Length: 202
Image 1: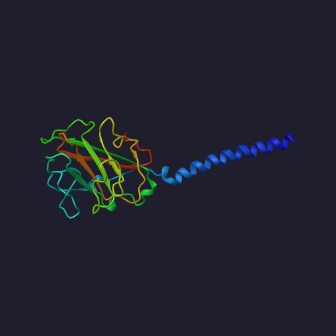
Image 2: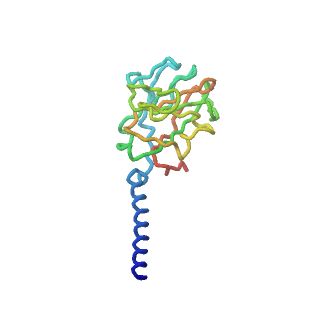
Image 3: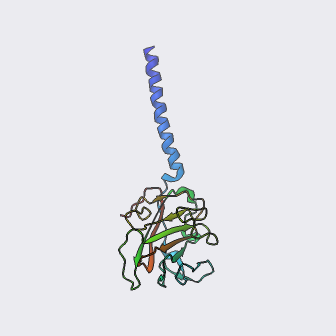
């Protein structure tokens, strides 16, 4: 009987180990084993629009090479929309659960502005022909990401850990917006990384 008890104990331990392996394997299937995907910024273009909250960027609007607006933002809540073509994006977004995005700010004279809270908002857009701004707070059906305080102490999206996102398709654009009272006139995207919490900028 003692031998039978020992055998059963061994089977129980093996089963527990097997369960642990299964959990790890399941997480890997969800994308944790996928290397971070850093978007090649040289493939991106920025929508060239007159600044101001009434300006409405569309895919038909003229675009300029690069990831920084050429015309200064002269009003609060003005947009800098950067298009994300299919060839620059991951083919299977379901492999990624987190997003890290960083940018630089400049004032009207082109001098870099120290980053902080209440300066810049960022929105990720699925369909550029749909709702571009989403709800006033948080994500929406066409805007899976809407984050405030980009670059600031309270923000998370610019940090290596990034923010958690469940992607249903590749986004077509990322859009930055200056806050009311901000001196930000130019916004430049410096990195866009899809990952699973395993990204390091170092």
